[in-house]
Amino acid sequence: MTYQPSALQLQREAAKRRASRRSIFIALSSTLAMGFLITILVTGAQGYEKVKESFFNWEYAQKALPSVFEGLLLNLRVLIIAEFFVLLIGLLIAIARTSTSPVLYPVRLVATIYTDLFRGLPLLLVLLLVGLGIPGLRISWIPNSAVVLGTVALVLTYSAYVAEVIRAGIEGVNPTQRQAARALGLNQAQTLEHVVLPQAFRNVTPPLLNDLVSLQKDSGLISVLGAVDAIRAAGIQTAQSFNFTPYLVAGALFVLLTIPLTRFTDWLTRRQDSKQRAQGQW
Amino acid sequence: MNLFEVKNVRKSFGENLVLDDVSIEFPSQSATVIIGASGSGKSTLMRCMNLLEELHDGQILLEGGDISAYGIDLDTVRGKIGSVFQAFNLFPHLNVMENITLAPRLVHGKSKNEADSLAKGLLERFGLSDKADQYPNLLSGGQQQRVAIIRAVATNPKLLLLDEVTSALDPVLIAEVLTLIAELKRDGMTMVIATHEMGFAKKIADKVVFLHKGRVHESGTPDQIFGAPKSSELKAFLSALHEAGRL
Image (cartoon, rainbow over all chains, first blue to last red):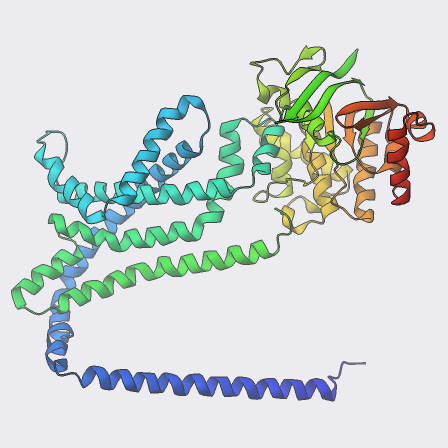
């Protein structure tokens, strides 16, 4: 015999449908009201026409796009190289800071001072110190290109953040996991590589990717050193036309650049959540 | 000769003396069961035996050699002693196969093929072949613990330490795990088992050691310990178990 929902259940489902229709209606009307209000507030402002002209000018946007886009390619290059070094250096610092061997005490000390220093220093300051200070030393073998020095400054700052995130991940791995690995005869290094780090990275993937997204947009700050990235390119356009639309174009491109990574982060987080829910005992 | 021996071992945590002059001999191919109330020092003794805890006095001898000597290579020693814990401690990021083959490959220098066929053989023998590709979180507690025991056995240890391996399981799952342990005993594996499963202890043990307040209070064959307990402490422990329906 096939299952027939009881009258009681049918009633319950009908009530549920009514409630959900009502929620949709409320959400729709409140969104409309909000949109209407904002439109009136913005377009009604005294300077609206002027702002529209100097920030949202379609003609200038089209004109600026090619050079701003070219600048963005530089941001992209900087960011790929910086991300690589940030992850590498961050990992090494995190390993150093979580080590317990007395031989590594000086390394631990240096790593601690490093993270304290570079997490405290504003990125802009590091950029200026590295970008203007190092060329001032006039050491012949150090390149004085704004792009290279800007990337170095980004790596210095972000490695400190990423190191702390990875360290949190390492410390979050249950000590019994380490014990089980050692009891099987794995040495310190093998335990770290095969048991601790894989779990540590899993634990901190969301905050790690969050830092990388943040690095993506901060790659635009190298423009203060004169590197012609997207923001600098927009600035040059603006200086010629006295119209600020190119900045908006650069902003839009940055947002477009970070969206894929942000979505990827969300997807990864969701996937891990569903995995962990299936996990009784870790 | 004894395969393994604990000699005059002392261990304290701060003021609290947990192991007080403990000496036990473990003949080759024997199963020794350690019983005692919570806090009697069972788990600490097990952890001292695989050198996860530092001794404060005494010695631990494996095949006559002092493995508790200062400066001994702990990794090499631990490679010879298999340990299984109450909480399974499988590696959650590795599947069953990878859990089992990790130590044979890394510690014992086996090739991937050798390690895989070893693991497959063990899984087949203990009825877990269909779980080879599963991740630990999808297994039942009994399956996880059996995999943990197989993982320890796969390193071909001289000695197997089982620390309350059934305490986190329900009766049906306990039976699965105990069957596996009994089979290993038939293979001639030397085992040290800390457990609350007295029925199992009676069946499998060659020797039973009753630990009380950090001392070996009584030891003997299962018949002696369960049939004719001498000290009042052991009698009290057994009657408490009896009342709890565990005996």
